[in-house]
Amino acid sequence: MEHEVRAVWYTGRGSADDVLQFGAQPKPVPGPGEVLLRIRYSGVNPGDVKKRSGWQDAPMPYPLVIPHSDGSGWIEAVGEHVDPSRVGRAAWCFGAQSYRPKGTAAEYAAVPADRVIDLPGEPTDDIMKNAACLGIPGITAHYGLLADGPINNKAVLIYGAAGRVGLLACEIAKHHRGHVIPVVRRPEQHRALTTRGYTHTVLDDGNDFIPQIKELAPTGIDRILDVDFTAHIEQNTKILGTNATIAAYYSSNSNPPIPYWQLGFANTTIRFLGSDDFPLQSKQDAAHDLTALLSEGLTLPIEGVCPLSETATAHKAVEAGKQLGYTLIGVD
Image (cartoon, rainbow, N blue to C red; front, side, top):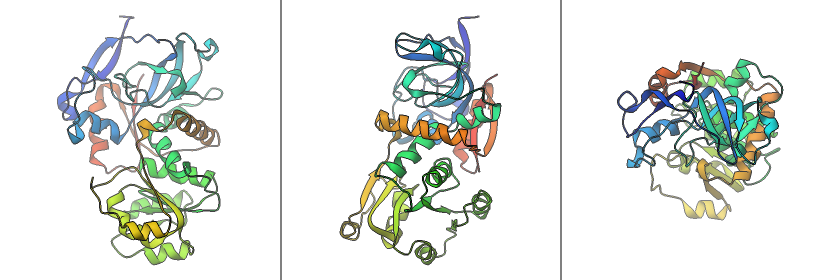
């Protein structure tokens, strides 16, 4: 029916196979300040699968949730107070399901217009794929790196550099002329980063790599983007310069010990990142920066594209955590 669309949703927390449902939902209508995006690709992020699984015993925020905050597609209609000339443009979105019940795992999504970024010209399908990967990881990386000022000519260490946030952080830091030092855990990740031109990639294979970092950054690291605050806090105190920042978007321990005086005497800033609550202007600045990277030829490794009906497969792949790329849902 023309007033229904294919979608994936859940009405309770649990495993992907148990709770994700595929079928028909009412076609959304853009309200004031919204656009209707016809989805081509929906990005699947670790945060999406955590929300669905009930991570940290989080309750259902809405009776029914269509998951995924990131995506790309075409603006088919606009609500009141939105420039009608945007209709027909290719675009990508972030935050579609941030404090909202319905995201991009559907043929159509109504998204606040200020979370939808127009793509220039007539982008190729590959650009549309890459655009759908940008939202949560790219904005997290951008804010974590730049919220405390410019990074040009500064030593920037990025843990988890082969991951979704980490790889985009490398690209953003390079774009902003930082001295990029990626850190990875597996040899294949090291090969992938060096192939992309990151010749100072450090392999954290259980051996002491602090001397290598000190050689690369003799005056200390200025900015750290950290994938696990708890796991790295002790070693970070040994490599930080003065007036440095640690920006962390995850911690394996919710109550980590913090070596206060070592960090305090170095005037260290610690920034904990929750992308849903970044200032809107910071999100928009990041989104426009990421769109510029796309225009300059940014290409991300796409691990797989699942059809909408197989969204559970994509969720399980992301949960397994063994990928070397981004996971998408393709909506035909």
